[in-house]
Length: 247
Ligand code: PGA
Image 1 (cartoon, rainbow, N blue to C red):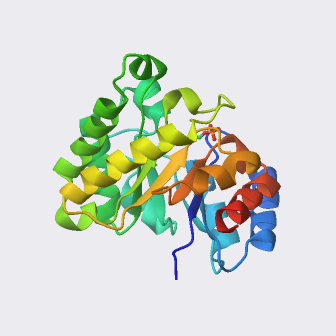
Image 2 (image 1 turned 90 degrees about the horizontal axis):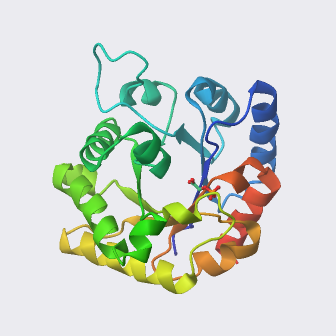
């Protein structure tokens, strides 16, 4: 059987208790047993996600994590803490973290390792900015970002990674990457993983995935799922993306 495409929602800095309750209920009601879904919610709502989603097939996770296990790191949240709330995954290295909070490749690599160490799935984001694309540096950038994670990862961690290709210019722009560009970058990432002896890694595409373009994007070779921002806040649309994944 072909594994279901992994569809992960990134709620970013959105939601409140009441809205979340409605979203969790609608997700549970609309999700099919064959779907592989997860939602990454703001830290304060992990307990709510756990309460609402435990016992369902829908996973939940965080959008960031500390690279440290514990200590004097005010404001940080460790992977162990996330595991305490039943998280199955955490996004690391999202472009917003890289650009707005100064996370570099080395920090992202340490975060991925921290997440995998507690048995969760690190969803490692890579992707080029518009300037980098225009300079023809796309391959170089994504390869460098993934190489940093692979170099730091333990042998076990390497096999637990999910990698999300998210061209920065496609995020929240309404303009997803062209299919040929997604195909090319995913093939490149697959090759890099294979060369590192890592097979079977799920490669997600993210950046303006919507119900309308999901089928085309998810049908591309080496696209094993999607990381969905804006459209994941609309549960009907998010579930339509999951349906498109199986069409
Ligand atoms: P978007 O965001 O779907 O709103 O483009 C994707 C992401 O940032 O993960």
